[in-house]
Length: 333
Image 1: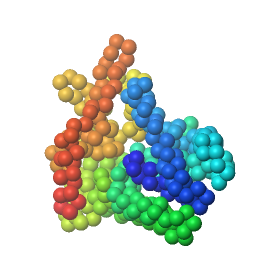
Image 2: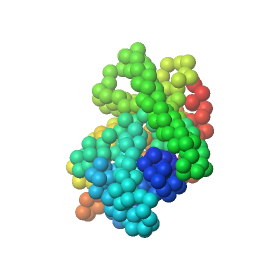
Image 3: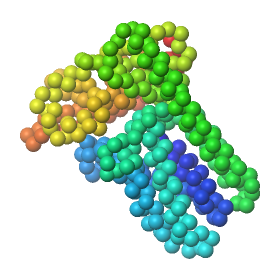
Image 4: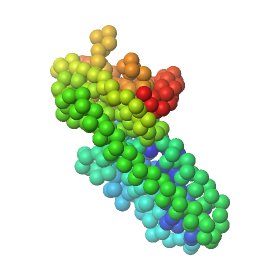
């Protein structure tokens, strides 16, 4: 999830663990704990694009990381504060839950997490977008109300508990909505006589009303959108796989690793003799039926020693176009 959401979750967890003993220091250090796993993004400044992408939500988002580093961070805070209100064990427990709940929440997103690193299995339930105001904002309000109360006030624990219950309840609701959307997609494919090999569904940005499905067929991937306000049938648009365009590059180490990252959901496009690999898991840049640009695209440039892979940058206009088309499509077709 986004940084603000992880800060709020970490703060609420910190409060639940140590709020009664240390007051607002608990949500403060809980917020810090909830931020630490995402520091893996700094890898992009030191390693190549493929390696940085592999490391993102890898070791720092694992159970092993939580177990190993919670006592370290707990000891540092215990030494820093030098107060007897909380022990090293107390602070270690706070950091464990702050570090551990971060990847648990991320596992519900499209990217997922390698929770059981060093095993390569990536958990990705794909039932909530990385930024969802309906999850974060009520949670944030309850956290503010919590921190405004005295440490010993019964309201403090009540507000914090409500924040955790409401946010968790919404997360469970998104799983139900995913199931409902999945059934509609499958029924629509059957009604249209479309034969497919596998299907993957996920919510579109910032909401859980409008859903997208990636559908794999023999030669192409189909992408369709469904809003709970729709009144017409789902239209699936085809995007050729073009995997054969890779040629000998398919066995290149970086390319094969990038394909593994996409879990096989990718297409190859060619522009001015340059190849691009599009990661389908995160969809297109807008809801426009004529949209061809994907959210994550990698430029592939053969070199004397192998292949250079670079992620194509986003431009400010992309977000503006997405929001406008997204709002229109959410209201139904």
